Amino acid sequence: MSAAAGSDGASNGAATLLALRELGERVGRAGAPMLAGLDETAAARKALAIVAQSGALHWTVPRAWGGADSSGLAAADDVSCRALCALRERIAYHSAMLDVMLVMQGLGSYSVARAGSETLRARVLPRVASGELVAAFGLTEPEAGSDLGQISTRAERHLGRWRVRGTKTFISNAGVADFYSVLARTSGAPGDGGRDSLTMFFVPADAAGLSTARFEVTSPHPIGDVVFEDVEVADECVLGAVGAGLDVALATLGRFRTTVAAAANGFARRALDEALAHTKRRRQFGKPLASFQGVAFDLAEMDVRLRAAQLLVEEAAGAVDRGERAIAEVARAKLFSTESASWICDRAVQLCGGLGVKRGSAVEHLWRDVRALRIYEGTSEIQKLILSRALLG
Image 1 (tube, rainbow, N blue to C red):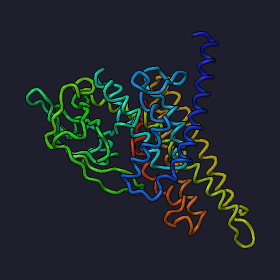
Image 2: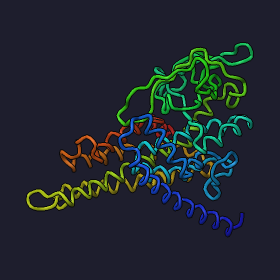
Image 3: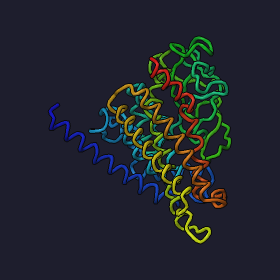
Image 4: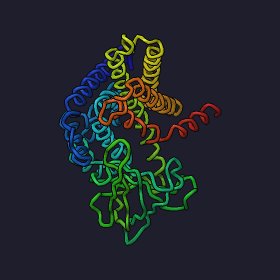
């Protein structure tokens, strides 16, 4: 590639990211009010319809199967991490529900895009990009969270098909999804590390023996248990090679984990804006809260932490899009952004005083919405473990 061509690609990529930030802002600003007063399921379906109509869902699927053209950002046959980060930060600023329904289409379908057969990709992915099919990602189990080697859900051969039995938990889109990308054990025993013993499967939600049970979490969205009672799937539903499921799962997490950090930055940016507006408006002892040094110093630190987090996300997302391993970069971004966003949202609650804990206020919502991001797709402790191992070789 010539220097000029490389420059053109970078310029096109920058223009695309700017357009995506503007798109995310429009989707979030217009869509959030439409979800007010709806129950969890209705809000989720409405949110998905909103992001689908905007065209944002196309960025969750590679171009070859109905997705967006990520030229200038990532490989032509892949999903751009930077594109999703641009969308998620702006959308999350306005609505956690819009954000989660956007990203779950990518998180739930990426295993199909990466490892599914050509027939399955052609059948499923264009309908994911249009919002016709709702996707979900099934890793976590009651006894297997950060350690995927503990997975006990088992898939066994039976009369020329695969029979899946077990329980997944904390599955976003449980009961709403049309299919689940499910990591199951095809050999070995829990605790073996998962290498060569786990396989990823595409499991339709209407398969006989599959059931769901919803529960509530602090930030409302469809989530719950998915139970497999001898659910049968065909060979075409195996995603990748038998025994190679851990690699598929880790590749999915590696591409989407940085976007969690971007969503956290969206929550943090909204919290900072709310805190600034409140402390400028609210008067105590005859002057605005913002004029007190302690308050002003909090606002300054909130700003610095947010900007540092945004820079770490830019670094990590760029490395992922370039095809680098980016293990340390992703861990840094996920760890720092989610921890900082949690602190920023907490400080916003404190600076808003009683209004900060009033049910339904913006900062109260943000405080609840951001908390789970320090757990989902790799806890802060796991990010520290990954980063320390990278540092120590």
